[in-house]
Amino acid sequence: MRIGELASKSKVSTRALRYYEEQGILSSERTPSGQRLYADSAVDRVRLIQHFYAAGLGSRTIATILPCVDAGHAGPEMIDSLRAERTRITASIAELEEAGRKLDQVIELAVRPDPEHCPKLR
Image (cartoon, rainbow, N blue to C red; front, side):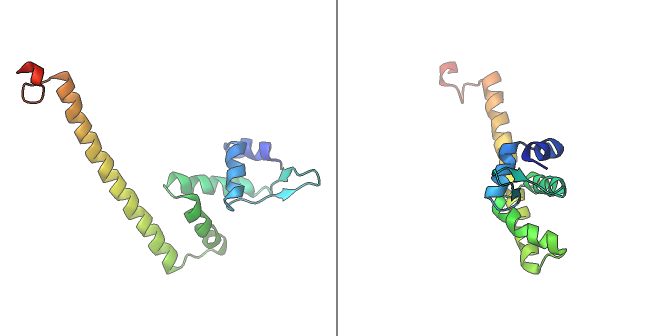
C-alpha cells in the first residue's frame, strides 16, 4: 500500500510515517519512481509505534524495543531499561503535580490578594 493509504488506515500523518522511517522504526519498499510501498502489516506496526509513543517512550527506545517484539522476547537489559523509563515518567508526574499545587496558590493569590503577598494592599 502507498503512504497515503497507510496514513489513512493507521490514522497517522504521512509526515509521521516519513519520520518513523528516518528513525529506523518503520520500513518500506520503493517503486522505480521512488514511491513508498508498505506491507499490510505496516498498519499494525504503526499502531504499535503509536502505543509506545503514548507510553512516553522516545524513538531511540522504540527502535531498541521493536526487535524484541519481533523476536517475541525481551532480555533483562530491555526490561531494566523499560523500568527506568517508568521511574522517569513517575518522577515527571510528581514534578507536574507539585507545579500544579504551586499554580493553585498563585491563582488563589490572584483571586484573593492579601497584604502579606501584595504590597499595594499594605
